[in-house]
Image 1 (cartoon, rainbow, N blue to C red):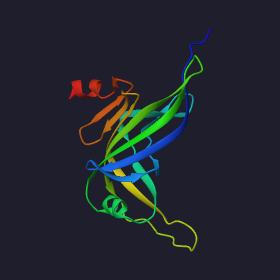
Image 2 (spheres, rainbow, N blue to C red):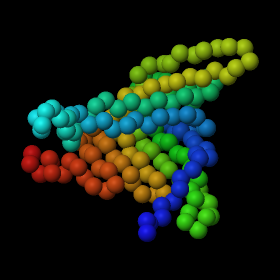
Image 3 (cartoon, rainbow, N blue to C red):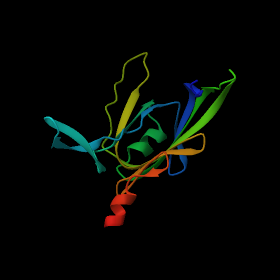
Image 4 (cartoon, helix red, strand yellow):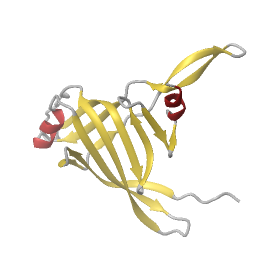
Length: 169
């Protein structure tokens, strides 16, 4: 019989902090994905394999409603230490529901100030994109992922993927 896994559901709320100051609430954000660089080898023809330790550029996007001091802080052309907190619903094996806290810690630089579309009767949505050098994500108090490009760290579900490389250097 298969082991039960909790069913994750909707995000209930979220906040964004920059330098420990609240700058946004109930925003849309997209944390960067990790894309490994690849090398081509010959195995019954060409085959791409990931090069562990080399990753493509990482980009974060935050979409905020309205222009305010929080958007001004996020748009400043300087390094940002961002903290994202969100709460997701969780359905357990016995059918009960609970909420689970998640956090992401990001070190990033804004890539610019996004366009601001103004239209009568509609809210202004401003998207800011960032180049990311460090990202650490936790769910329910457990570390899921750590990527620190400048320090050469890559850890997923507790496994250090750079330790073998570091031992050889």
